[in-house]
Amino acid sequence: MKIAAYIHVRRMRNPTGVGQHIIHMVDGLAKAAGVEVNVLAPRGDLESGVRPPAPLAHIPATPLPLARKWLEMSWWAVNFPKADRWCGGADWVYCPAEAYVATKKIPLAVTVHDVHAFEPDLPWSKTPGHQRFHQRWRRLFEPIQRRARLIVAVSQFTKSRLVELLHFDPAKIEVIGNGVEEAYFDPPAAIELPKEPYIYVIGGLTQRKGDVYLIELARRLKQKRPEMRILVSGAGESESEKRGDEVGNITRLGYMPVEKQVALLAGSRMSVFLSRYEGFGIPALEAMAAGTPVIVSNFAALPEVVGGAGCVVDATQADQVLEAVVRLDRDEGLREKLIARGRARAAEFRWSQCVQRLIAALGAHR
Image 1 (tube, rainbow, N blue to C red):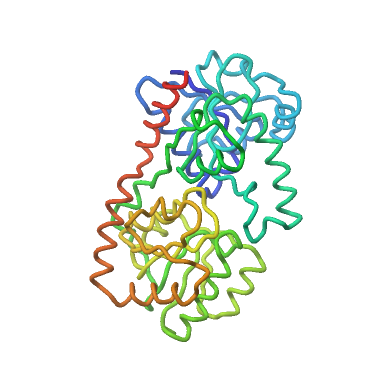
Image 2: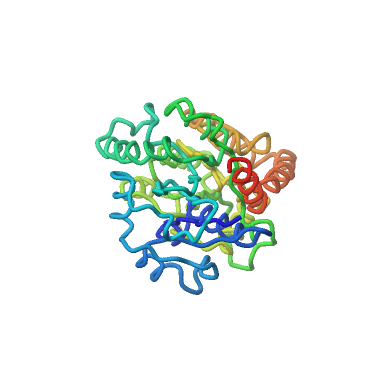
């Protein structure tokens, strides 16, 4: 099977969940038996972001003639230029993130990570910025819905929302999931860890990641367990970070490379992920793989991903969240049970398994 993978290079720099998906899925396809992969991206993107030691630099690549903005705008607006000419007789054009590529004869497969742009009842759904975002994604999803042969969803939740909100044909949607990097299953790197007990949070302080819930937890924790700190990795939003800094027991770490993140997770009392909306939620799996018990919100795909291997709380109920944190900190029996369950659950989500599910889906929809 020959696959032309159209990638967004910018999402692979300091990658969050979508960037990790792009890297591991395209790399996994290239290593799979019987699969030949060629990367497609605008010339400038390839020159700046897919050179050694970049993650996908070992895969053959074809530069596209226009900048990404103008190329994708042309594909959306007039369904031209057809990408077949750059695909070398590929059996599929595959987009590991939300993008539309115009083709003449080659079938198109597009991955959808979430549809929060279309959710009507999120706290930010009515803001002007989100409304503009909604309109951009509406234009993007229209040709995807009409012309893509296969839609790849990362969770059953995302599949169900595609059907309920946008009336996608469920027969065209295959769920392949997300994975966990192997490093999270290995012993942590030898780095100096904080001496005081701490909670580790991945994702930064942002509205979407549940900043209000985490900051309220920090306030209450300061009274209940003043010796415990909350360490937050990832990029945040300035206003959220300002409010977090004012509490006094939140430490922002910024971007953390994998080896340091594994060590910080393994050394923490627990990981808390109170995100308001996730199409999947890789950080919860990363924590479980590292042997860290997790507490997640009951929003969106998080209960599906965690299964029965973590504590699921109503993040809007601050007392419930604090109670879960205190209990998990004090109850060693519960900690050991959740650590064992979490490791087993995370082992079900390896990138190699996601790649094999994608290959099977591409074969079934040819």
